Image (cartoon, rainbow, N blue to C red; front, top):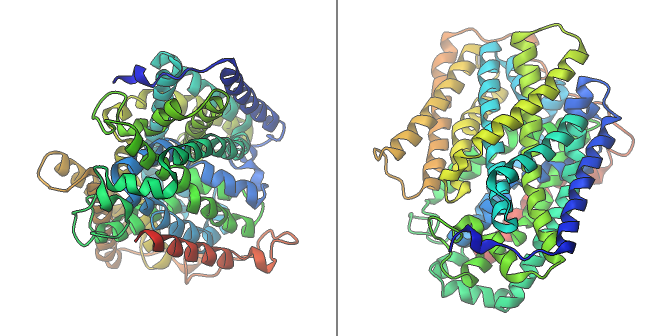
Length: 552
């Protein structure tokens, strides 16, 4: 079966729902334009948004191709072991960001993650991170855009280039006009649209297979077998569907990759920096952790349903790739009207992910590359114009990088390779530098550079057949771990040989050099006990442990 086998029989009602969504998204962008007067308004929403808005935007920004298509594909390919990406691979890091790291981000009033590195270390470290982040964001934006175009081509019959241009143009329009506020408010809208599209697939699919009990029985009889119903069983070796040892899962995914993504990826952190005060900023990723706990219901479960209902799923090419698990279920299960909602939700997920990448890219390009190293001391209006032009440039480059993703039958593998390369060494540099005030500026730069090189070398040696891993995912786990260890070793070796910064230069940036005011910009009510980041984070961590118990 080729991609044409995915074609959906959409009627006027379905297309009407889709058009209404496009119009609404553009309307939100134009409405947000009225609040933009300065570059801070454009790039950080004037640091004025409430925690519930930034929290939903935080999780929605991650609900792109990685989450919807990638996690459903993983559900079909790896079974319940995909839950690791949520309960150990996301929630702990999100809580850590809110409780431990956001006070330094928000309290230092930095405008981006690379800018924090400039204050903590030096300009070379800052520039290296700014450039690597910019490259990573356009590559990941390409993943979302390609996935969007592929689905629109397969489901709606649009030529690939038309689908790419239409999707890119809409995202470009509402970010260029409405800035980060336009992106964030649309991400809140998209969060609910995405759920409205995925819930019917899950419900109808479960009814078809006889509920959860019927699904479990069908998975046991599938090529995954009993192993597809467990998360930690058989992880003492690599003889499990994920092909990963528990050490790689805990250290590579649960620590380095997870913390590297959630705590240092500016496309996510930017949402928290736009919050109206310190407490709201800290609660942003923790609020997002709660929907993150239960999102597997509408991603992993549909992947398992596709595994047991779509014959031949898992082909290397064509319409039966794992990446098509969700579209295939939409084709097979949903009636008109509901089908339009599902297609709209799927498209919304791609647009939310791409918007997060582009809004992060335009901020870092403008503040951390153009203003810092090309044209300094220009007017605020000048940098606002540069930001809008950077948005256009980011989308155009994203169109080009969209086709790189075409070489991966499971885009989750591609995404994990990117995270291992860009996020893992950055997180290691961050976490060591934040807790070890003695770490010198020279050590910061050399650690980040060497960790990135180590991760890239691991990937290339694996692809060249020199290093043997059981799967692409296992390589990304170990690549991330190797990058982390490399950063730590270089930091320990270089620091004693070079001069550190003084305590007064590090105040408010690291532990042990002066505290951060956790009540900064506080508003009445935000200090209530039930809004405590520690309380809310502790509950989220407890739930992540409890959710594992039925599927150990």
